[in-house]
Length: 114
Image 1: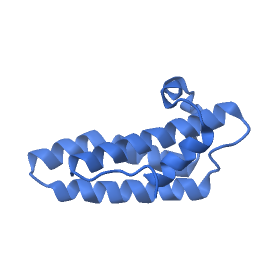
Image 2 (image 1 turned 135 degrees about the vertical axis):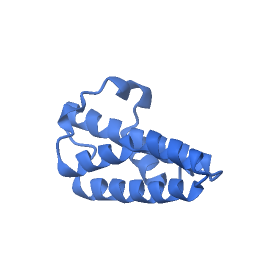
Image 3 (image 1 turned 90 degrees about the horizontal axis):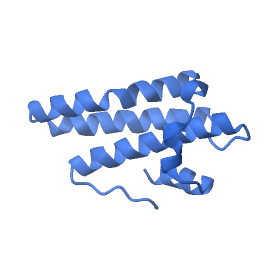
Image 4 (image 1 turned 90 degrees about the vertical axis):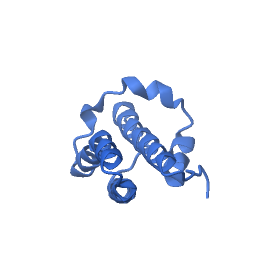
């Protein structure tokens, strides 16, 4: 989570402005994989709650962190092309939000700096 916050701080913009980003630029395998992992969050959380299985949340967050790490290694986020940059930042911000929410469900803080 701290790495993601560092990327967003390096950009310096308002995360709320990313809600209208054109995500069509997120067409690489690493981006697709991360988006698929993010899309699993609502169903995973519902199932974990229904099954009294908080460990499922931890496993999901581990997998999400791994998907983000792969994305971070594969893609440069702060590129010159504004459309691509905003799309990548929107994906990064969405990942930060899901990590923050998942950790909060477990009662774990999500530091913004290490």
